[in-house]
Image (cartoon, rainbow, N blue to C red):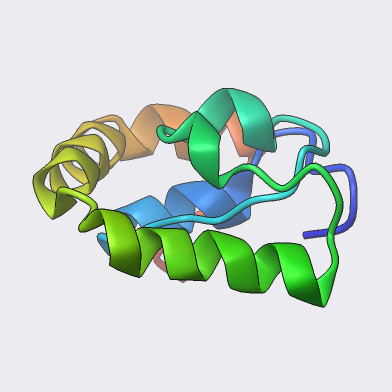
Length: 89
Protein backbone atom coordinates (compact mmCIF):
# COMPACT_ATOMS: atom_id res chain seq x y z
CA UNK A 1 0.00 0.00 0.00
CA UNK A 2 1.11 3.54 -0.69
CA UNK A 3 -1.13 4.76 2.11
CA UNK A 4 -0.58 4.98 5.84
CA UNK A 5 -1.84 1.69 7.24
CA UNK A 6 -2.31 2.40 10.95
CA UNK A 7 -2.69 -1.27 11.80
CA UNK A 8 -1.54 -3.20 8.72
CA UNK A 9 -4.68 -5.25 8.22
CA UNK A 10 -3.78 -6.05 4.60
CA UNK A 11 -0.42 -7.45 5.69
CA UNK A 12 -2.02 -9.59 8.40
CA UNK A 13 -4.47 -11.01 5.88
CA UNK A 14 -1.56 -11.79 3.56
CA UNK A 15 0.20 -13.74 6.32
CA UNK A 16 -3.02 -15.60 7.08
CA UNK A 17 -2.90 -16.75 3.44
CA UNK A 18 0.78 -17.80 3.87
CA UNK A 19 2.01 -15.15 1.44
CA UNK A 20 5.45 -13.61 1.25
CA UNK A 21 4.81 -9.90 1.77
CA UNK A 22 6.50 -7.01 0.01
CA UNK A 23 5.29 -3.88 1.79
CA UNK A 24 5.75 -0.16 1.72
CA UNK A 25 7.43 1.70 4.57
CA UNK A 26 4.18 3.45 5.55
CA UNK A 27 2.25 3.22 8.80
CA UNK A 28 2.48 -0.05 10.72
CA UNK A 29 3.62 -2.11 7.71
CA UNK A 30 7.37 -1.97 8.47
CA UNK A 31 6.73 -3.12 12.03
CA UNK A 32 4.61 -6.07 10.94
CA UNK A 33 6.67 -7.23 7.96
CA UNK A 34 8.59 -10.29 9.14
CA UNK A 35 11.29 -9.78 6.48
CA UNK A 36 12.77 -6.30 6.66
CA UNK A 37 14.54 -6.87 3.30
CA UNK A 38 11.12 -6.83 1.63
CA UNK A 39 10.13 -3.34 2.74
CA UNK A 40 10.08 -0.81 -0.09
CA UNK A 41 11.80 2.49 0.54
CA UNK A 42 9.87 3.94 -2.42
CA UNK A 43 6.80 2.45 -4.10
CA UNK A 44 8.04 2.32 -7.68
CA UNK A 45 7.71 -0.38 -10.34
CA UNK A 46 11.49 -0.85 -10.39
CA UNK A 47 11.78 -1.36 -6.63
CA UNK A 48 8.80 -3.72 -6.55
CA UNK A 49 10.37 -5.75 -9.37
CA UNK A 50 13.69 -5.82 -7.51
CA UNK A 51 12.06 -7.16 -4.31
CA UNK A 52 10.17 -9.86 -6.24
CA UNK A 53 13.38 -10.85 -8.04
CA UNK A 54 15.14 -11.11 -4.65
CA UNK A 55 12.42 -13.45 -3.40
CA UNK A 56 13.11 -15.88 -6.25
CA UNK A 57 16.91 -15.52 -6.16
CA UNK A 58 17.18 -16.01 -2.40
CA UNK A 59 14.76 -18.95 -2.12
CA UNK A 60 12.89 -17.52 0.86
CA UNK A 61 12.01 -20.10 3.50
CA UNK A 62 8.22 -20.35 3.43
CA UNK A 63 8.15 -22.05 6.85
CA UNK A 64 8.91 -18.65 8.43
CA UNK A 65 5.80 -17.22 6.80
CA UNK A 66 3.72 -20.27 7.72
CA UNK A 67 4.77 -19.87 11.38
CA UNK A 68 3.93 -16.16 11.26
CA UNK A 69 0.58 -17.00 9.70
CA UNK A 70 -0.16 -19.47 12.49
CA UNK A 71 0.64 -16.82 15.09
CA UNK A 72 -1.74 -14.34 13.47
CA UNK A 73 -4.45 -16.97 13.05
CA UNK A 74 -4.20 -18.09 16.65
CA UNK A 75 -4.61 -14.48 17.80
CA UNK A 76 -7.22 -13.59 15.20
CA UNK A 77 -9.96 -12.79 17.69
CA UNK A 78 -7.70 -10.31 19.50
CA UNK A 79 -6.72 -8.62 16.24
CA UNK A 80 -10.35 -8.40 15.12
CA UNK A 81 -11.31 -6.71 18.38
CA UNK A 82 -8.39 -4.31 18.02
CA UNK A 83 -9.37 -3.19 14.52
CA UNK A 84 -13.12 -3.58 15.03
CA UNK A 85 -13.64 -5.80 12.00
CA UNK A 86 -14.34 -9.48 11.46
CA UNK A 87 -11.70 -10.48 8.89
CA UNK A 88 -13.60 -13.65 7.97
CA UNK A 89 -16.60 -11.66 6.65
